[in-house]
Image (cartoon, rainbow, N blue to C red; front, side, top):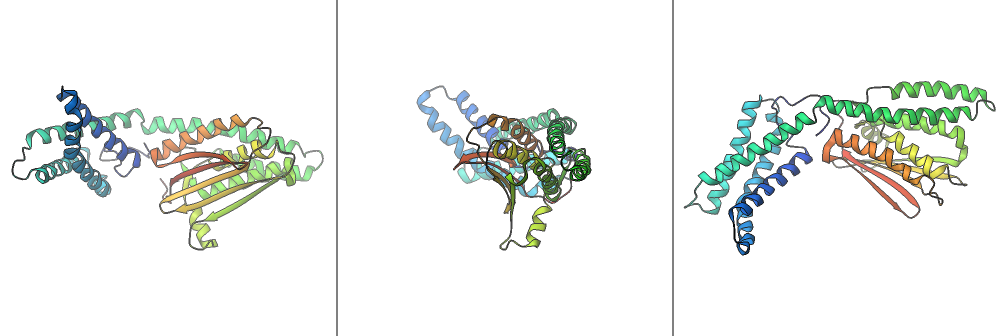
Length: 342
């Protein structure tokens, strides 16, 4: 379930969402297998019956998925009953077409139509139950709780950086406190809403400035932006207009600093790569791995937090991956590229 502003007027799931598409495919195929398993008693016949059922189901199922994907924008404006009637109409058309192609002269429609309508009713009932269980109010409450868990870590780590220079460089500490106040004001914004990538980058850069109070030249952060044939300022600005869940970059940088830079005796570089690949936004945070591995398992809390928030906002269309190789620790995030404010 994407984190919605509210339920769709049609009462239907978003048929353009990857998670919805995969669940429909899985549910219908499981129902088909269950139907064959119940109907056939003889084990040797199962494989043949499964193949026959697949031939009848898959064509119609793919037609339904494609038509609903293309027609999803039009159905969003319908009230629930007409929208559900439209879904049943698409299913009826696909089933009749599939049966006619399989046996145009002897097609008996009563049984396949009954089965298709039952499968449709069960799928719609499942998505209705799921939307109620993961209602917008519950999703927003979960998002607020997850976001609230991040704020104290950021605040106390930054405050420690200021305390480290307050005696030796009072002017610098004063400026840092002012910046920290601005940052914390940004952190207190509504975590249920997405923000522009530009805001996330600015927040992360301010955090890095505060960390440099403690680490000095030991901390280097390099930003790499790509998203067009030529990496120019216009391409970067277009990239930064993407909307992303709030407090996504800063915890990743905090992990990179804490686990990759602090334990090392020498200077280290954190590389943040942001790029667009088609309809997908890709973010990667790459930091050195400390030879001692100090508190390495602590990465998991922040990463699980971000992964869960990505799920609430984007369902299966977003993912977080981890790769450790060549002495580097990389966290990669992929999510839909979207510039709309919702």
